[in-house]
Length: 93
Image (cartoon, rainbow, N blue to C red):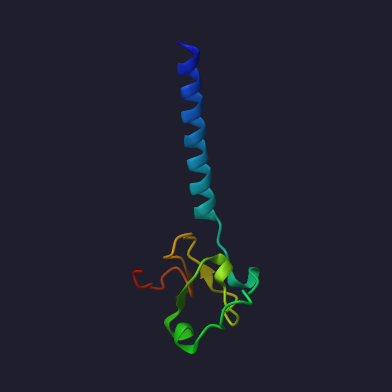
């Protein structure tokens, strides 16, 4: 086996290990609103959002008034949301 082939195999193994690590972290890391500071540059959560049980935003977009038991859905895209619980339906983006 050539040296280049060994290097390619090692790189593939490292990429695979990194993907597994990120997936495991994403599955096992629940971010609760009570553990994240409010973003002072955003408006407070609205009554409608409280009633619906969700609003769009990344972890850093947590608004003042978000109940501490709410969780972030773990998404890092524009579809990310703070939700009342994992069963809360979120409208498609």
